[in-house]
Image (cartoon, rainbow, N blue to C red):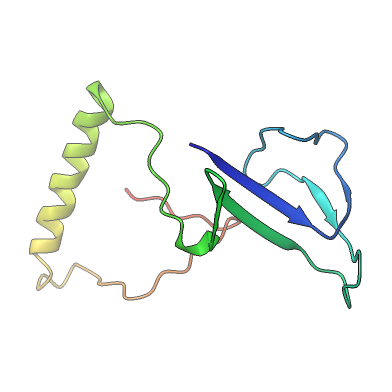
Amino acid sequence: GGYQTYYGHLSRFANSIKAGAKVRQKQIIGYVGSTGISTGPHLDYRMAQNGVFSNPFNVKFRPRSQLSGTQLVLFRQDFQSLTQLASSLDDPKVVVVKNVVVTPDNPISML
């Protein structure tokens, strides 16, 4: 809670965006511009939590909910399967992946 984001040097905001609007991932919120004395088009993105600015890459977001009921049972089953799989790393049928690249357009799902 208490997160605010700031977008500077935009040429304009998308039609559906007003101050204080809630946005979703991948939603277009504005268009890159070059305002003030900037030397070229760019975005000045800033994030604050409870009024204190911080590096967005260092922010540790908390989960919005906790698993319960069927979701918790399924998670525990998946966790147990993965634990068993990890314990059999010497098994020739197991492939160990060292690097995984995930992008918004190419997400990864686990089991």
